[in-house]
Length: 347
Image 1 (cartoon, rainbow, N blue to C red):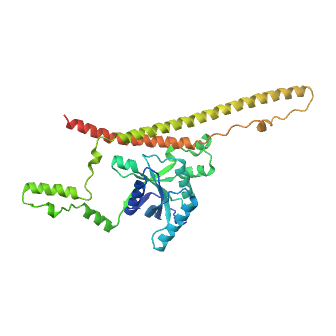
Image 2: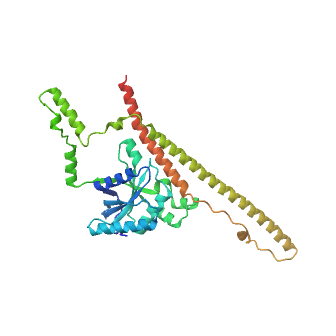
Image 3: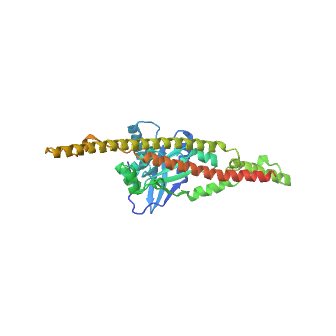
């Protein structure tokens, strides 16, 4: 598999070609609500990750077949002189629900095996449809989290030592959509209304002029979408609240597991202290009788403290809860604004 060229300058922007954006949207929407993934191809130039092409991954669970498919696709692209340099991957999401161990593990492998500049593009299909805005976000793992994930130790002590929180798992990079001059000219041409002459019998009267404008707006390929002004958007908030409650329940389960570990450690430590106290009493008695003392270091082989559970899942759940609450906050503002506007109009 091709790897990205080394670059000393850190990334600060991800530039997507318009064709790449359309391919990602098409793949994710056709497979909705099933999450899908794909490969990003391009080049890192002076801190700007230029993504010029992409292709989807097969939905098969066979890892060998999927790897062979990637190699065949990149070989075919190389034969036709198309960019085949891997710079990351993309995946779809549902209502911002993408913070999981699978995302962490895949992105770690990309940054560790292929290139430290690799990114993941998240396209939220349902959020884009509900809010009327295209939801595309670019992420990469931070250097501190990469070092901690390499050691696979996410105890409370290690997280405090490495200063890991839910806010420094990922670095989010701004996305720019780039089009060639020909594509830009085509978009401007499509935006110009072209009315059918057969539907416009006369342009001499004021009424005919109004009809002309109405027909032209209806025939415009890129006519404004007024569905974003619809007040009935409750399913979006309802689903976000349901996902938020599910995350809260999962977080409570993680908290219960952590409390159970703390109680287990406390019980083992009580047993250790009781054994040490008894052994000291025995050694004191043997010292009085002139006998050899018994070793006290046997406690390490007789008792073992339970291993602390990983705190990574809990941290990811906190990040997901933060994401859901942020979405609710962003959605509630425009919704309340529309409701107040309608209230004023009805007076």
